[in-house]
Length: 190
Image (cartoon, rainbow, N blue to C red; front, side, top):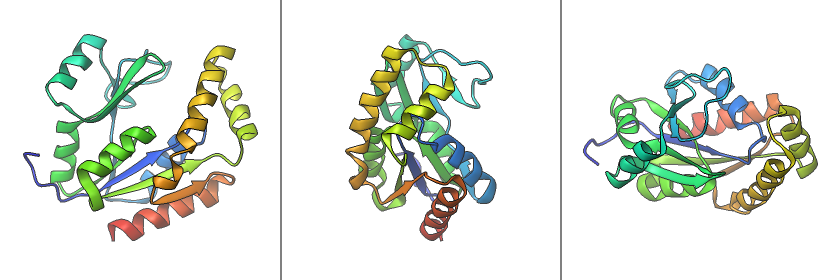
């Protein structure tokens, strides 16, 4: 890397619907020296999402060009779209001394660990049960039956990696989960 980072990376992974975005939002409000990493994606922008705030929405050709140029610290292709963390944006935040919170899939998290080693804390947010996860996903109203089944298969796959993370937080009670995540991060960043 061109810049020796002084900040640290906190990496969240979870199955879709486990509550990681809600937890991340709440933790970011509590910890001053923590910024959220905005991922890039080729998926369609959802209602209410803003480019550069929720995601950097890129077309497939642009995303693939950035892959070829080594422009991501991690990237994955799933559900028919690319997702990735931009290297230059990450380096810029870390070089400023801020700590960065990444919301990535399990493979992306493990890639971050390979690159940043002990400068990264991997936190897995787990739903209390598959039944609760199904209820949460159905409650979104954004998935047809086929997409729901695909997300559930993906959830089972992702949960099989949980033991490779530094911390597993079961999101059974949102307040308790946020408190536990905050404590883990504060302990890590000092």
